[in-house]
Length: 154
Image (cartoon, rainbow, N blue to C red):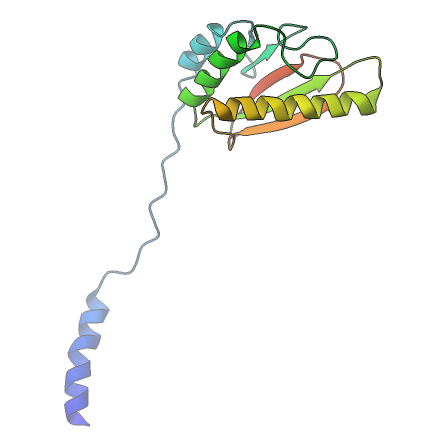
């Protein structure tokens, strides 16, 4: 028994001296260069930038034709720079509002907004943009067919 205690005692003492396990390091919140983001947004073709809160939109029939699910001819000229911007700024979180308003009624408009949203998500994903920080919100109603609002922690 004494022999067993003499073997265990040094191990227990060494274990008591070991540092306590720490929690994994937390990533420091990244600082966002809003001025740089605004400059990039200003270069997006067809986009209108809003300063406060930081948002941008593709109004009217710039991107989608009236009642159309598919973008207008020339849509990739607008969507490719948008995808490149989103890839370059992967850390930013955006609320993506996709709207539709037609004379067909709210149910049709909601379905149209959802289909536009799905198509847009698929296109951006195919161009290498990550969808995890894009929160799509299709809705029936008036307003820009596509708006992206920067989500910030308050």
